[in-house]
Image (cartoon, rainbow, N blue to C red):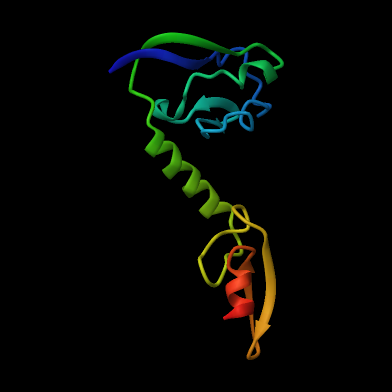
Length: 125
């Protein structure tokens, strides 16, 4: 355990509007049962970008004992979110439509998607 800054959410003030979710680049905040929650403390970097958008002032930064911020956990969490959101993926590298622009193509009566990074290799062989 280390002492560091982390977001604290006052459930009495939180209306569950969700405005704090998007500014959290690490994905630490989510809405659970109509209230904002810090999903996992190791995902919160304590930067506080979420504070400015809260219309009720339910979010504050506090310095306290908690787990260390984990960059690896943040990347894994982002990947899980992208995988859940991704409907279409590049047939060559597996990149999702959330990661790169995808373009549909047909080859030998098969419909596929290719990302912009893989497109040149597809064209030029």
